Structures are given as structure tokens and as C-alpha cells.
Length: 60
Figure 1 (cartoon, helix red, strand yellow):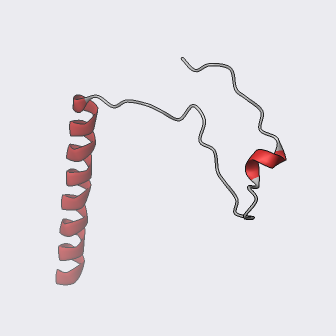
Figure 2 (tube, rainbow, N blue to C red):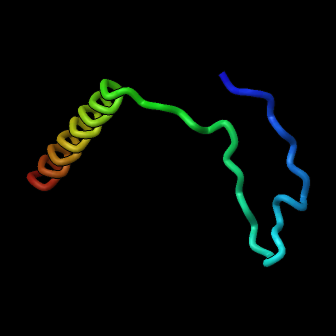
Figure 3 (tube, one colour):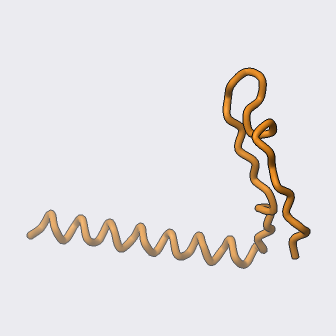
């Protein structure tokens, strides 16, 4: 679980050089190897479907 959220004041958002900083709080997650493999299989399947669709549209 995540801890309590801190509120940021405007001085933390605008450093002295004028650039805007973005803070990502509580965004750290860990992925298991199984989840990564599932994501790769899903992405490969989507790629195959896209190639098949392009080929069928080319033939039509």
C-alpha cells in the first residue's frame, strides 16, 4: 500500500530557473515476469492482427 500523500506548495513546483517540475508520487510499481510475458504476447498478437488487416486491405 501507499503511505500518506504530501501536499506540495507552489515553491516546490517552480524552481528558481523558471522550469516546471513534475513530481510523481506513489507511482512505483513492480511487474512480475509473468505479467511482462503476457504483455509481450498481447502486443505480438496485436501486431500480427495489424499486419493481416493491412494485407487484406491491400488485396481488396
